Length: 307
Image 1 (spheres, rainbow, N blue to C red):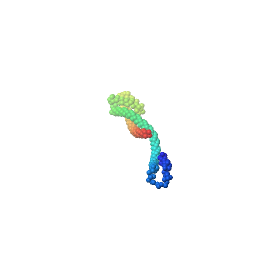
Image 2 (image 1 turned 135 degrees about the vertical axis):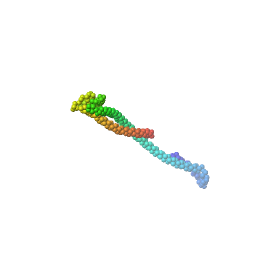
Image 3 (image 1 turned 90 degrees about the horizontal axis):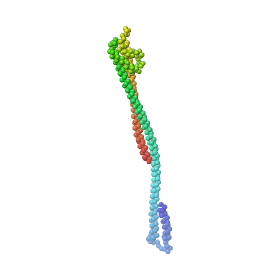
Image 4 (image 1 turned 45 degrees about the vertical axis):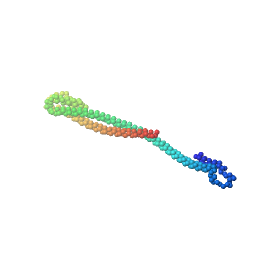
């Protein structure tokens, strides 16, 4: 701009100063008439014309330069604003990504903790269910053994009672010896086997009668009764003991069966509750694991985007 301004304004002025003496007409020619055609062909006129053309060209170039300058200035200003805006947007984006990464990192840690807690809870519930199942199996085995034992005892006592019921009074003396020994063996076996169940059930007197019968079953009814006695009281005592034992075993069997039903129901309720809790925990683990995978993936992508 400075050099062209000098060319437009300074150079023509300088040339005019140099040519001014040449343009002045000689004194002796002042009185002569002006020849326009000759003036145009003079060297000085050509120089002046050339200088005018140069000035016009320089003025046009100056206008072009000013237009270019204005455009450049506008572009620089616009570009500067765009760069400033881009930098601000980039910084805001980086800050946003940094905040997002921090949030995702915290979420990932929380999800990991929640998954571990659910896994512990599922394991705890599974352990409780396993222990309850083991206890139920033990209870069932004990009940089956007890039930089988009591049923066998009840059946044996019923058979003994049936044998004695076929013989009344003096006919007891005609009872086959093997039958008598069988009844005595049953009485002795059941009293010994279920001593704890019969404790407090049989009186001392009944125990002495039972012991006498067991000790000598074939001789128990041999002694002839007096005119005031009969064989009925003697056989009645044995009948009473056998029936009382049978009723005690039946009562215990009924109680055991009711307890077994209650234990089974309690186990089924516990099992249903634990299985529901386990299923809910496993569903939470699956959901949280999926959320964790998505969170970690987003976090990794955010880190890449921030870089």
